Length: 409
Image (cartoon, rainbow, N blue to C red; front, side, top):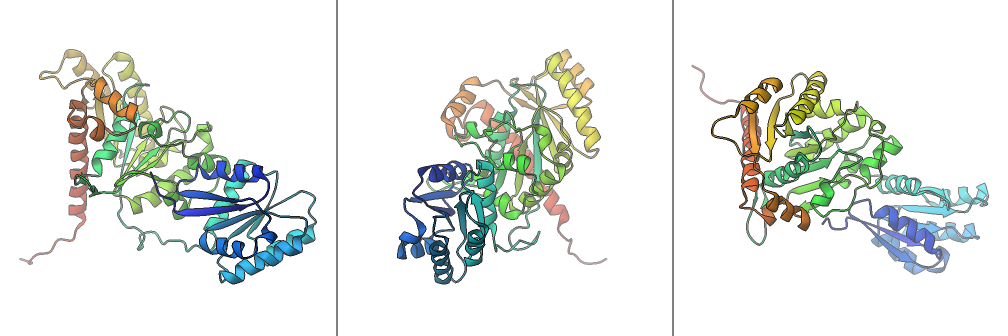
């Protein structure tokens, strides 16, 4: 799990305030919450120490705004103006008192009736205050990561199993006790409504995509970095939210920007797609160098795969798609129905994932990848072979991009 990278202190005698902040923070990976059951103006030197040691102070404004403002000014002086402070105030607080707090150094003032969404937005705004914005391609990242989309023709095809274990294999971890990853891999669950990638890795729901959908902002580099949870060395995951959001709530420019930021930070970006159609799928497909269509070989599954492939081709004419047949071993000689299905899809069956329910169940029940639960299983080996092909493709692309040095003839 990801270690705490940001800390919030809640100073309030009202337990409801502490509960609200804690409920919001649990959906922001890497954020820890401390509680101080007191009024801001009553803790004196303790408040100065808290401001110095934590990233954000949230306090419930009392009846004496002047004392609270004086405490805020002292914290700002003690931290050289670096303290980030958010206040909660009652609806009856006079405007003059609100102005006094903001002039003292409070970044934002919320009503004490604020919703979880409003609190989440305010926390994110305060934590980003005064942070330098990275220049794309600068020192913070220049990997130009390879984007791989994973889709499925029907429910239960095994797309989640493939996405999770493909991303895990592509880290190429080495070592027994202290594992080190050769590649950084981001795994995104874009199935807003029924995504299960998080549960496959024993991770909590991630509220970040829900915030994008509900609040409508375009993500920056800081949001992209903080939205991921480290599941294993080299593997960072954005799980689906617990809340169900309409698929159309996301906008294409939001998704396009998020992927662009992540490509600069990761060698591979694996995206699990929903089995549905939405406008924001177009930038996903345009950014993807490879689409893996996971399907069975039955007539209904192949029929649905054909429909989805037609939509994907219209969204991105240059998209390279590979067919992954799930729960079947590759036959020595293709059966007639396999030949007919490949002819209908106009693509060969490139990869085959054998039916190995015991290995898949062992990994899912423990919340770990196949590499940890059943690394020698036939299913794990098949996914490793697929990952090697994709890594070789990326390496070949990188080699072709290198300038050629040699003697002129």
